[in-house]
Amino acid sequence: MSIVSGPARTIVRTGGAVALGAATTWVTRAAWGLPVALGARPGALRAAATGSPQFQDGKFVNAESSPVLPPGTGASILRQVLSRGDRGRPHGQVPLARSGRVPEAAADLAATWYGHSSALVEVDGQRVLLDPVWGHRVSPSPLVGPRRMHPVPVPIEELPAVDAILISHDHYDHLDLPTVRSLVRTQTAPFVVPLGIGAHFRRWGIPQDRVIELDWGQHTTVGALRLTCTQARHFSGRLFTRDNTLWASWVIRGPQYRVYFGGDTGYTTGFAEIGREHGPFALTLLPIGAYGDQWPHIHMTPEEAVQAHRDLGADVLLPIHWATFNLGFHAWAEPVQRLTVAAAAADIPLALPRPGQRITNAEPPPIDDWWTALTRA
Image (cartoon, rainbow, N blue to C red; front, top):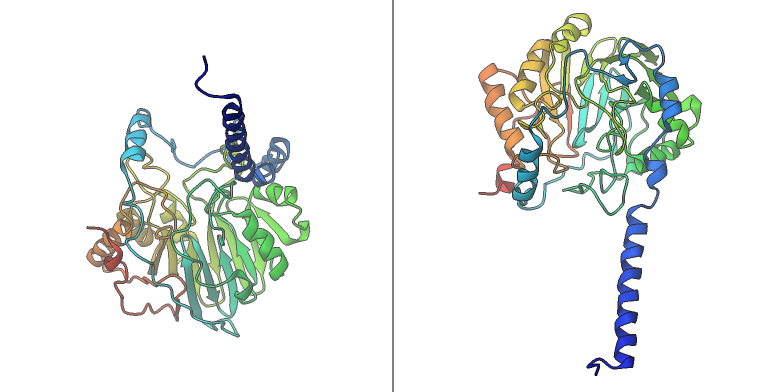
């Protein structure tokens, strides 16, 4: 005897079909655009790498030994993933600043931080956009991956006209396909990128005359600015790939002012070399977040960022790579809290703007502690 009647079985089967259909729809949406978002095919990437001193044994390498994950760290990472909860998120809404559209670039020096590593620098009357990421997730999927923890301070369509767009490397929190496509429509500036990323752009249908691809030590000129590709200590990859495009930092040199953009990097002795060759810098933008004992070579701690700033021979430090995406295991405000202590001990002036806030003339405004109120007890 069956307790469940025929019609009930039909209902169960129908419900199962609905659930399966919903799951299939979710997977389809999660994978939407995935092949394109992954970037260039291996053959195109190898062709771009040929001849670079940084490309060895089929991959790009750092100047110093830099294992992404030292041996024995896998179990530690898993434990922290399972136990971190929401400590990496702010307790409340991140306050945004809206500077408004500036009709002309600052004749001297200005910078606007949009969150994470995205910023706009104005150097001697020209504008350079750095690692622009306006996406909701830093992921190839619209449904899976780290989500933005505060809105973008300004719509991408309201950005002023820029003279160049610099990309540090191809990780999703630094190279966002939807943002690139929006900038192709709304801006006329070239994308200046490390080796291999040009192949991604060609895969995405970006006009070749909009892309300038450089190796470490190479430079290009845009107006009165000289943009030099310099080393970083990191890695690259779009989901299933690793180290088949180059990562970089950038020197922005104008007639009067010089700016250093660190992108994403671990501490390296190369900072001192860059400082000797290209400094002194009026402003550095250096990463301070997503560090951890699990990957000590590829992300700097706040204290290492202070040392890097000193190595570079720089004046004002504007921290980046924090506050916007939960990419590490530390508390949300820990990077800036540690940075303020280390910078005070080293007598280094900091610029600590809210996302969207513009600072001018390389003179940081008085520090406004806007993060403590968002820190969890």
